Amino acid sequence: SNYIGGSAPGATGNKMIISSANRHSFIAVSVNDNTVNPLVVTRNVVNNIDDDVIHTGTTSINPFVGIRVSTGNLQQYQHNRVGSEVNNSILLHFRVASTGPLYSIAHIISVPCATPIANNFSGGLSITSTSVSGSTVVPAMAFFDIRGATTITNFKNNIIGSVNPGNITVTSNTSSFSLFGVDIQSTVANPLINIDSNLVRNLSGSGGSGIIRAIQYQPTVANINATVEVNGNSITDFSAASGAGKFVQGIRLLRPTGTHSVKARISGHTISS
Image (tube, rainbow, N blue to C red; front, side, top):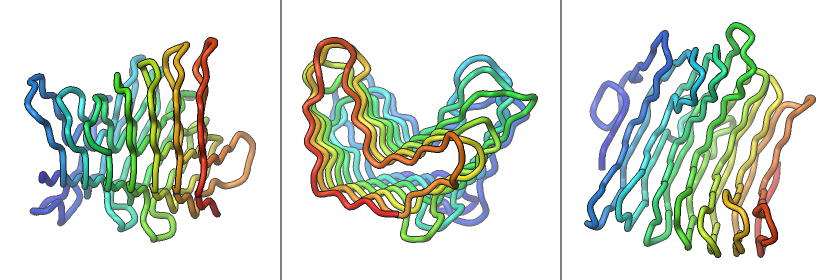
């Protein structure tokens, strides 16, 4: 139950300003627990932030991270919020003058979670990327990045975007931009992935080429047999301005490299523009 952002209690008031002429990585909540004690991450709020970064280096950085769980015996990840239902709650400005990638994440969970990752929210983000000195680096943003050595992943009843039109926007002045709702990765054999009853809405992009993708699963090691259940998700008001090199994708499942495969069932979705 932490509040990060703003100038007043409850992450209200004026925006918290984060600005630097040099590259930086801002992480609002970072959890590293090397004990075996049960770890619960619930009801944290990251909101009301203006983050402006110029990246001039050659290595990868994370200009903005809302909540990150890197280590620990995670039992619950629920009711956490990055942004709000109000448009422009979090402003992200990525000025790319580098050869090093920029990847920002609202929620990143890198350890197994004993119970479903559920009832979390991300929305109200306005993202602008600008190329400096002719850089061709492609910035990227994921709202949920779930990875690590976990056999079972349950991701359900999470919300990306509010009912307000244009609640999450990307204006790309770089060569391209990638925006992901949820990206789930497997690094162990025979994982079971359940992506159920999530809501992705009011995401839009304009400017250069790029990808807007609501749900993605990808194994990151070869020769595993994955079972993926994708059921009852809703993807609505999801768009990018027309033009060369623009892709809008609702659900994307990738198979592992090598001889093994993904066994998938996709059913009961609502997908509309």
